[in-house]
Image (cartoon, rainbow, N blue to C red; front, top):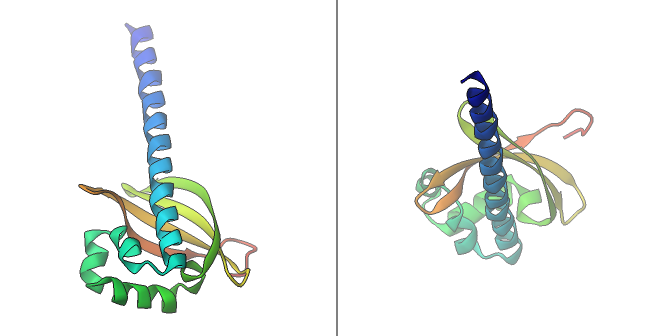
Amino acid sequence: MRRMLGVLVVLAGLAGSAAKADDAADIAAVIGDQMQAFTARDLDRAFSHASPTIKGLFGDPANFGRMVAQGYPTVWDNSRTRFMELREVGGALWQRVEVTGADGAVRYYDYQMIQTGEGWQINAVQPVELPGTGV
């Protein structure tokens, strides 16, 4: 019985890792598509990746685009993204992303992701200062 319980615990852990790996790929695809949409200035597409809360705050793609252009210029004019760790904090999933702007500046952001009926959506973005980056 004890051996069976150990096998079940290991299998549950593996299933959780596989689910997190699938989530990581899906989350990266959503964030990556939004980054491409910003570069293309396709605000409708970029806004489609925002959570209902974010959509409610900004109301329409144009307002959302202005906020990103003014508040997150590296994201607005991004040239490269690198997905770092996906972690759970207080029950929420946060994806760390390294973003290189068109000007070559490198910044780090944490994206809070939520799952909705439309799939993964971005619920918040916070700049992150990593030790030694001077951000």
